[in-house]
Image (cartoon, rainbow, N blue to C red; front, side, top):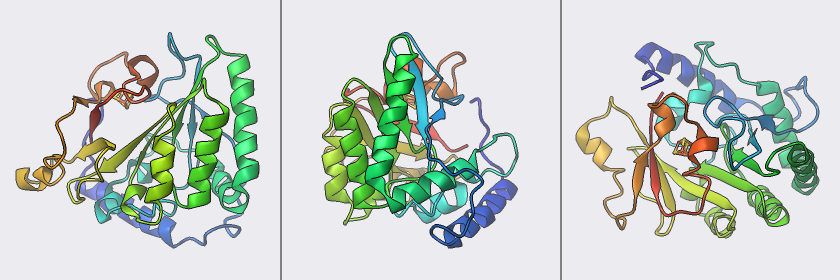
Length: 261
Ligand code: SF4
């Protein structure tokens, strides 16, 4: 594996950081140094471009407080709470994104579409893939519909996301409309403390080697029909990233397994 399982000490630090995030005021008080919302360039996992994808972008929101479906396990282990300093997060940008997403999702949708068009113009091929929420999650119905409308307005571009908001009954109907979009691949994300999502969803499962076999079994998807399932190759093979792999970006049937890191 390229990335180690976090130590108990690191998990304690993440828990403290994430608890602080959760209790921050919703918007306006954090006085972000960044004002404008923006998609970031692809990261080490997503890659930045590939043979079939001219540009990879990432959209982020602040960790946990925009994640209504987060489990207690998430609230301790989320890698976006990493305190080791090995990863540099652009958190001021995430706060700006959150503020715009809460205040005016329609205007934010137009801003995102403009950035997509600009990025596509300079890309070869002129196709942009957007990882939605390397940090953060779908927190409201208007915000889910914003992404549905973006996907509808940008049919040649690809979008993918892993969400735990499926566990929030009020958000499930809007998420179901989002995952019907042919260019938006939406996975139900689970860990071993969660139940299986409703039928029909692609699943992304986070494995925690510190949990017991029986605990892991809780999220094995045993109640689900058997579908293709792959271990994310980026986690154990050099030279591969999402732009090259594309398993999660394309409308194939299949689930993906990640390791906690
Ligand atoms: S399975 Fe492929 S597309 Fe999905 S996260 Fe891993 S590298 Fe990216």
